Image 1 (cartoon, rainbow over the protein chains, first blue to last red):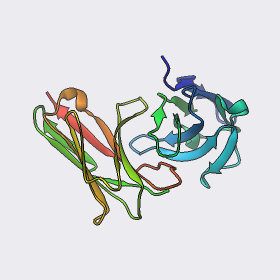
Image 2 (image 1 turned 180 degrees about the horizontal axis):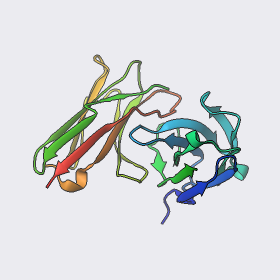
Image 3 (image 1 turned 45 degrees about the vertical axis):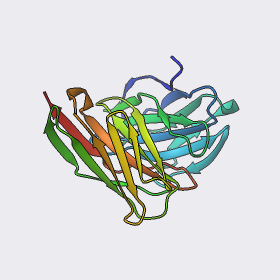
Length: 113
Length: 110
């Protein structure tokens, strides 16, 4: 399978704990995106990388969230001191260039108790 | 980046009927994309229509674009139960930060 993969699929954590998610994009794609989606809503843009450079972050993204893409391959999204409001599906997507469609992974569902 | 707004929010039809969903947006675009999302899964790209195109077909899908009205529609013909999903439009400008509205939740009853 050469699609976008995300790990883990599900994560349950207690409030205050740190969590880290991983995304492996399609190998030849240089653009990588993170979105967050809550039930009944559309995906909300969080941040975007072109190769290893993080080029845009949503102003909705608090400083508890950090994303990296070392070497321009896989990416990680870390949430520090999780809050119940962080409970959501976190989606990763990749694309090959500016006008190409996005290819999404199946997401990591985070539940903060 | 800009967000498309889908209408209606929910649509329920019988298998075999056609389903039409609409999308409105606010500023100029390079292209507009439609995506489908099955419950608990990621989004899947369906079709991309460029700003200089007025209509595009892909299998049972037909997309129209009216840049003067800043609107697009997605028509699914001869719907099947497997078409049950949420559908999102994503108008795209030069920055290609795709943003999504709340989507149209389509239910196709067998």
